[in-house]
Amino acid sequence: MQTGLIERRLYLDIDKTMVDPRKIRSNFTIALAEHCSVSRKKIQQLTRKYLDGLEDSTKFDPRELAEHISARLRKKRTKERAFPSEDLAAIILDPLRVVGATYDDVGVLGRVRRELFASGIHLGIFSQGVGYWQEHKLQHSEIDLNLFEGKLFEIHPDKLSSDVLDRIPAGSAIVDDKEVVVETLAEQRPDIHAIWINRNSKEISAKNGVHTIFSLDELSPLLRRLWLGTDQPTQPK
Image (cartoon, rainbow, N blue to C red):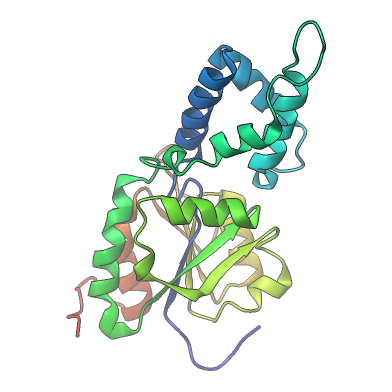
C-alpha cells in the first residue's frame, strides 16, 4: 500500500458507469440477426447460453461469442457452419455497435476536471474485463479520452487483486456500479474514497466508507467535499 503524498486521482469504471453494455448488446444482436437471417430472439438465446457458461460477466469476449454462435448455426443439409466466426466477430466489433451507448451524464466529466483542475485532479480508468474489448468500447464511445491519462488506465482480469490495488494512491476516488466492488474497496483500502454509482434504484449503500451517487452529475460536489471539505467550486487555472 502506498503512503506519503495523497494524490487526487479519480478512477472510473467503464460498464454501467460510463457505457451501457445492454445498449451495445442490443445493437450487435440486431446486426447479427439481420446478417444470419434469424430472429433476434434466436441470437439472444445463443448469447444467453454463452453468458451462462462464463465464470463472471466480465469474462465476456466478443470473439468467443462469435465462435459460440457460428458453431450452432449450421446448414441443414451439410451441417457445415453457415457463418464463419470471423465474420460474426467483425459484426460485433463494428464501432457502430458502441455509438450511442455512452450515458448522457458522462459529458459532465469535462466540467469536473475544470472545476478541480487547480486541486490537481487526474482522471483514470478502473475496469475489469477482456482488455481489447474494454479498450474498444473506450475508443469508439462518446467518452472524451483527452480528459484521461493513459498511464492511469487500470484494465485487468481482476481489478481487485492486491497487485492492482497497491498501485492506487491513498486519497484517490473510484467510481463503480458494482456494490460488491466498492464494498471491497472500503474494506481493503479504507484510505480510498469508494463511490457507488447506482443507476438502477434509489438505494443508498449502508456500508461504512462507501459514498452513493445516482448520476455523474453529483460527482463534482461530492469530490469537493471529500478532497477539499467544501461544496464551492475552485477556479481552474
